[in-house]
Each structure stands twice: as structure tokens, then as C-alpha cells.
Image 1 (cartoon, rainbow, N blue to C red):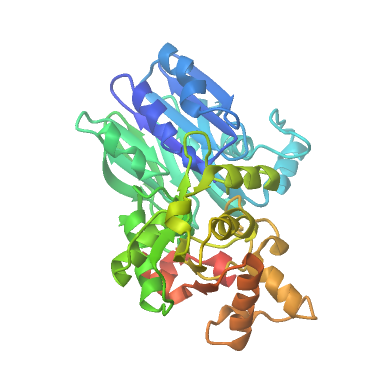
Image 2: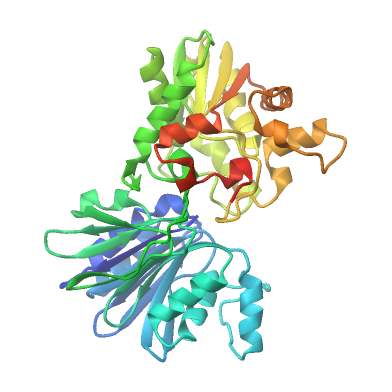
Length: 464
């Protein structure tokens, strides 16, 4: 995951750029960067793995000003990339995952292109995209060339000398949102939660295949929307911040509807409803609304020093964060039967070892896990997350139950089939819960509120 933010203004935009980028901080843990254009382009990039974006970039924020800017919270690569090109200097930030990045980079190297940001034979995605753009006759043609060449996904903001380009690949899985201030300033963001406190009102989404140009005079659409774009459904279930919207649909409202759907089909007799903080909280609120049971907090997140346990690059760091950030409250837990709502089960190790274990140790009578999406079956091809089948709890269950590693998994995708029920029971035992239940794909899609053809559900179904 990465989050990007850009601003176009008639006056100094640094404050909006600085805080707007900071509002993407839940999307990455590795690098934070800003580029701002006044009389010239100034850039700063900091490693944020051991520090907060605001504190690390504060001196840059105070030192420079300008009317155009882009910022990024990056999950992997050093960004922004600044290039001199035949159409002038430009600064680029990207989000997404280009799965054929190495192939494109090697083809460019064969053509004489050099890369400065490659580390351990891995290429910087943003630099490769920037070099692809720079080889075309114009920025617009360069972005279209990127869309022609890549596999996977990329959303980007490109700050040129006269304005800002915002674009999403034709798959449209990671949309951007454009907002406007009463002053006329325009901003583009991965997460619309950046807008309210900065005074922006959402205007439109940048969707699959669309290329939009923004300058001080307004918005110009240079390339129209692709009709086959599919937005990542996981944005609403887990990735997105509760105060954000995608396609005009509130993240928090979707999570509440997921929780309500979980409650409607549940027969567990429990004393209270809870969620795994933070993303499980909205689902738990919906469950409590529908069931009439009290919502309480047996686990609280110490958020002052710990971010998301899903975003760091190594399992060791993820586990450490998960262990340290959640604190059990014994007075709420002891002797009670708990429903615990969770956004998803990916590997299951953190849920078992660092969440459910704490509840049992604090004296829970029962722990019923309710998951706001179907079992995850396929590593994501469009963003940095799980990279192999054996990382997924559902796949480990299937591998344990099937003698043939290439066995058809169709029945495991169907909640009406016995193999599906056996898989869920295997996971329940593995995570040491009293009971375990998932939303079905149809229930999740209904909760989001878009037709299935508009949603990417690859990680659940394997269908692109």
C-alpha cells in the first residue's frame, strides 16, 4: 500500500501538501516524501520506519513554499522521483504494484536507459514509470504508454512545470479523488479523509484509464474513463481510513453494513460485541447496531507509537507491532462470551497468537470470531500484500486437507459445500476460537453497494 497527495494553488500550498500527505500515513511505513515547485523544485524524502512523517519532514515544511506539490507515503520505494525530460522537469509519485516491472526495466536498459534507484537487483517502481513517461513525445502520451505496458496496477500524480496530472491505470483498482477549496485550490488524494480538515470538498473520482490535468484555472480531462475498471473491494473492508470515501461510498458505512450482515445470520449467545482495533471496530459497531448487544472494548490499541501491523515488510516486524499495540482490558473480558469482529484473516498467526491468546489469558469464557469478508484465497496481484499461497490461512487449510496440491478448489469457494465448512473449521481450530464465521461474497458486495462487475474481488475468487 502507498498513499499519494497533490495540490495546485494560486498561493503557497505547502501546508495543504504537508498535512494532506500525512493523512495517507496509514497506507505505508517505509518512506515519506514531498516535492514542491515554486521558482524551482525542492524535494525531501525520509525513511519513516522509525519516525513519524510530520516530525521528519517538518523542517522541509517550514523551509520551502510553492504553488504546486506532490507527496507520498510509500510502502516500499523512495519517492518522489524528479526527472529532467524533453518536456521539462517533472516530479512523480505512484501507488500500486507493477508486476512486470523487472521486464520493463530490463527492456529499457537494453535501449540505453539507466536507473539510479535500483537496490539488490530490484527496481524502483516510480523511477521505472518515470523513465517510461520521459521517452514519449508528451506527458499525456507517456502516461498512456505506461498504461499500455504495465501489468498489475498503478495510480500516479505527476507534477509538471505548468500543472498536475492525475491518472489511474485502466483496471482502476486504486482510484483517486479530486477536491476543491473555496479559494480555488485543487487537490488529488488516495484517501479523501485528507480533505475535510484542509477545507476541500470532493469533486470527482479519477477512475480506470482516466488522465486528468489540473492547474490554477481548473480541471481538464485529457483521457476519458475506461468502462471495465474495477475498484478494489478491500479498500472498504480494511485498507481505507474510516473517514474516507471511494466512488462516493463511505468506508465506515460499508463496515457497519458488513457488521450488520454478520449479525443477521449469527446464532451465537454472547454477552458483548467487540472489534479488533482499528479496522474491525466499524464492523463491530454494525454488529452491535443489528443485534442490540452492547459494544465494548476488550482490546484497545496503543496508537501513539504503533501503526498498522499489516503494512511493514517483514513478518517479524508485523508480529512485534501486533503484540505491542493491542492491550487487553481484563475487567471487560473476564467471564464474558465475546463476539470479536475482524476485517479479514490473512495469515491468521497474529489473530491466534497476539489477539485471541490475550483474550483467553484475560479470562474470556468464549471467543467467537466474525470476519467481514470471505476467506482470502489468492495473493493480491495489484498491490503489495500477501505474495504466496502458503501465507494464506485458507490455503494452508486446503493444503492440509487435500493430498493433491493441484486439486480443484472450487468447492472451497462455495459456502454451501462441505469442503468449505471443513476449511472454516480447520481455521477455527488453528486460531483457537470458540466459533468462526465469514461473510459470503454476495453479502460483502451488497454491503459495499456497487455491482460485482465494478469491484475487484480477485483475492477471494481468483477472477480478474
